[in-house]
Structure formats: C-alpha cells, structure tokens
Image 1 (cartoon, rainbow, N blue to C red):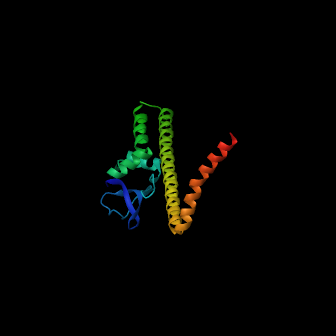
Image 2: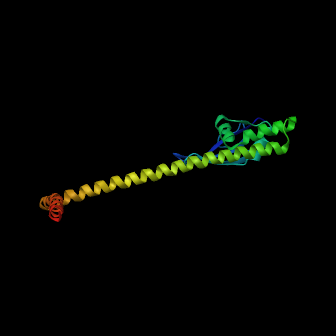
Image 3: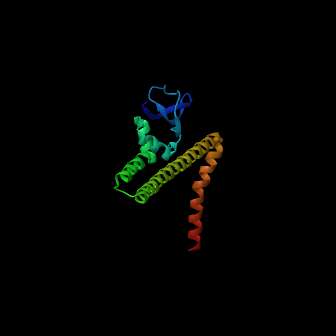
Length: 175
C-alpha cells in the first residue's frame, strides 16, 4: 500500500486550515487517513505549523512519500533533516548524540529566525498604527479648522503674527 504524507483541507471557504496526515495514496484528499501528524494554518503570519516530528520521521523511514507542499512543511520543521541524520546514524557515519546535537543546533537557529521575523512584523505593524494615528489627527485638525467661523480664524492668524512683533518690541525696550 503506497502511503503519502499530504495535507487534508479543513476550515471554511476562504480560510483554509490543513491537517498534515499520512494517508493511502488512493484515498480521497479529505477522506480516510492512517495517522494525523500535525496541523498547518496559513492564515497567520508567519504560518502556524504544529507537527509531530518523530511520527513524520517514522513514516518517512517506512517509505511514505510527501507531496511537494508537505515536503516543504516537513523541511521547515526539521523532519526531513532528522530523517537524514537518522540515515547517517544507521550507516554509522554519526552517533546518536552527534545527530541530536546537530538537530538541536538547527532547531535553535530556526527559532531565532522565526523570532526575528515576528519582531519585524510586530514592529512594522506598530509603525503602521502610529502612521495611521498621525494621519487621523491631521484630518481631525483640518476638519476642526474648517468648522471654525472665518472671523475666529482671522483673529487667530492676527494673534499669531502680532505675538512675534510684541516680543521684538519688548526685547528692544530692555536694551
């Protein structure tokens, strides 16, 4: 029985949510599956992926073939690397401890990259919010200025132009 690791669509129209499953290749896309390995939510930024890495590696070692999208997800979460390192352990090129150390180092590096992206996104979101607030304040000030009667605006302009002249007079008198 050929087994594939693939995505099974859930969620509503326009808001997809996927399960990552190991299923018989002849089964329907959303039909019967052998084991649920995780979930993938592309609606968030960055996309949320929950994966049972050990279960995925077990299926890969038993000959399951991932689809292109599933392969990308497995690679992103490190299941493909762990499978590769497990192959090196069985061939004798690595010890189990070395393989675990390499995988842990890779996981830490990946977590740093994800945190950097999340920080950049939150910073950009905060900047966009501040810019929107500044634009809204400018529009409100323009609306208030437009609502004032013309006489008050003229008085405000005259008061603003008279103030520097009075200050200049006061400084001349002090000398």
